[in-house]
Length: 181
Image 1 (cartoon, rainbow, N blue to C red):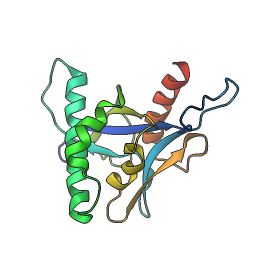
Image 2 (image 1 turned 45 degrees about the horizontal axis):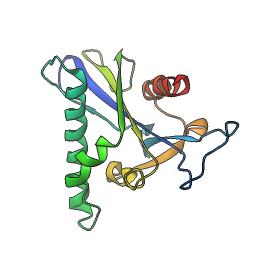
Image 3 (image 1 turned 30 degrees about the vertical axis):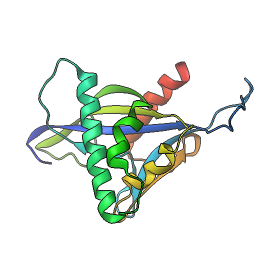
Image 4 (image 1 turned 180 degrees about the vertical axis):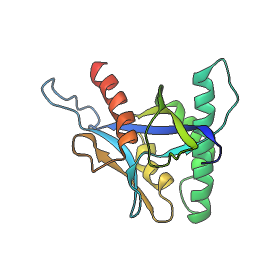
């Protein structure tokens, strides 16, 4: 942990509803397969993309979270461009692509997590990014969050692999909101 005491953590919950063919409208009885983006590594199991960040307090929490999300994703895009120079130009297109997504957040508070220790712990804000299945961005997100020894992929929500408990809590909060919408 970078500091003693509370450390601000941000979990990114990317969800994607099943992509339907253009012009096809599912019947009321058909369920839509919801997917969530997870990262996995041999040592750490499955988890959401997440980061630690100290930030100045602000009146507009939504604006702050959008700025933090964009900054984190642009950093990941620059890392990807260094690894794969021929990749889709995420860095310049990211603000435009994120505008197409619905954003929401939930203050989770202090959660038990394996990164906590006696003198330092995380206080989590989960950011939900609902990605429309109608454009290319969703296919490229796993590339953005995959780094050395870490894979990222869309997992079907109804059959998730084992996920870190605190990350699963964040997924559950937004899944419930989507069901009730």
